Amino acid sequence: MPPIDQITAFVSANPVETIIISVIALVLLVLAFFALRALIRLFRRWATGRPTEDVLTIVAASIATGVSAQGMWRFSGDVLGFDGPLRLLLFAFIEVAVITSAVRARRNMRENYSAGIDGLAVWVLTSLSAVLSSMDARSVAEAVFRLAAPLVAAWLWERGMAIERVRITGRGRINWRLTPERVLVRIGLAEASDRTASEVDAHRRLTRVALAAKRVRALREAGVSGRKLRVAMAKLDKAMDQAVEFTGLAVDEKRQEALLSQIGALYNTSALIDLAPPVPWAPEPEQPAPAALPAPTIAELIDDEEEDVPAEPAPPVVDTAQRAAQLRAARQYWDQQIARKYVPRAADIAQEVGIPLLVAKEWRALWKLEPQAYALIEAAFREHGIVDTGTFPAIEVPERERVLVVNGSATGASAHDS
Image 1: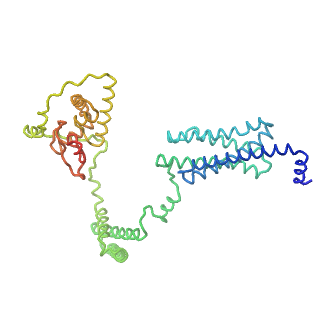
Image 2: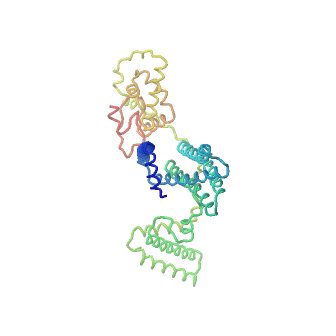
Image 3: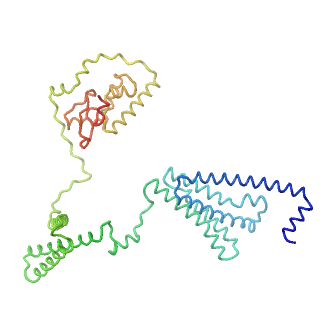
């Protein structure tokens, strides 16, 4: 009897059961629809903003993992003898372990820039799953397919990790010494730089001229005459003729300068012997101490308004926790300004942190003796003759000459200091 006739006969014989089954099936279909829509929304939200290759990598790896899980399903039933709920619970334990290791490896990559032992575990567990799945294959083709599916998933995961590693660190893992590009450059079929064919040809022709000129000069200085000198002169004339014809040497000033530079380097090779380059690990010579400024100059640089400022009362007594918080805030502000090559004044620190001026002066007197701040103050005195007092205003320095601050100020910060 055809299936449609069986269904009709069952409905006629059991109308109540048919209605109940239909209602349950309709409820299940509605639930499946909403579940599927929720999954689609979650997938779209997850895929938004991600590169297309990352999404395709996850999809392809999921399919390959599903194929591997199907092989483990058959292996757990045919080889291990699992059946029913036990088979459903235990068949895919290796795939779950692979996914767990992959997630841990990705977290290690983001935190430590390396997949670590979890990255190795992904390959080991994937290979184990592939071998176990292929052992229950019915043919050689099926065994090869079941071996390939988990390895494809692991390879896609590895490539995704490599792309993320480059994105985070800015560099790849290794640089191969033997690549097609290196081989082509080595045998002369490719160019290592981005020069055009005309630039490469011009450089080679100018180099021939320079080498031919060096050859003639060496023969002439050695006192050689006759046929050798004539042959060398003929090669020089030929190279020069070709350079003028094909490189525009007669009218191109840049090519003329390039030729003169090559000739100058070739003619003075022996001068390299007499060079005395600095020793990179030798200690740097000590800089002579700057001469002290005259007393009248120092007096003029000191801010006159400081004398008129009335004596500030003693700072109020604060508890230890509040003082520690003020000290941390002042120190953070000091480090930020020093990093900008700006030595803050005591008034700047007091205004920024909200502490008495006397306390700011005390802390500044200690911090300005540190190497980085002291270097800025010393450079200000050496370049501009300015003595640090922590109170007088800034000296305007052009932007192109701005290499340091002068007495707690920098170019562009005059509005803050005034």
